[in-house]
Amino acid sequence: MAREREGAERRSRGLAPFGTVPATTSARMSAQKRTNTTPEMLLRKQLHAKGLRYRVNMPIPGLPRRRADITFTRAKLAVFVDGCFWHRCPTHATDPATRGEWWRQKLDGNVARDRETDEHLRRLGWSVLRFWEHEDMEQAARVVAAAVSRSDR
Ligand SMILES: [Zn+2]
Image 1 (tube, helix red, strand yellow):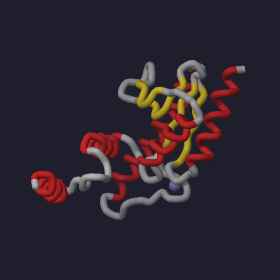
Image 2 (cartoon, helix red, strand yellow):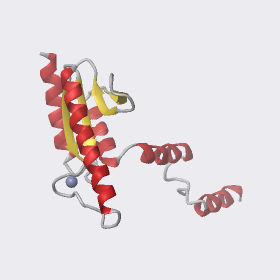
Image 3 (cartoon, helix red, strand yellow):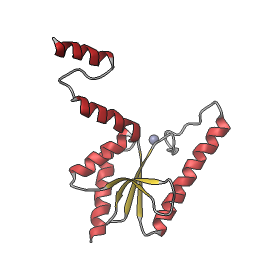
Image 4 (spheres, protein in one colour):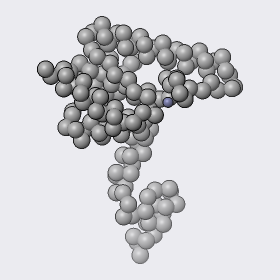
């Protein structure tokens, strides 16, 4: 039976068997995994469920190659979900043992760039909210929703 053969073929390629997710959805999901962190997607889903609409990965005006994770342009609100390792969360930051100095400089550079981005956005009249990837995204969504509704008043 052709369908059975195809099912076995899909499994051998590491794809989901039939009846779980459609092939197009699973391809889209694996593409998203490469570009979006899971906590950020969770936050976006929560925001969407609250009826909020936003832009994703908006280039930051005046800062080449920098983007804001989630933006509310009318409210002038930029939201970031920072990875604990890359942005040095105080709870989970670790310094890799090998090439320690190289990593230290790289990670310090990330943190300095985050602060610079925040200051730049604030100078442009934007508000900035940052969350760590370890934070409760339902709670984060409530904080974002409150900030958006404040800007409406
Ligand atoms: Zn953390």
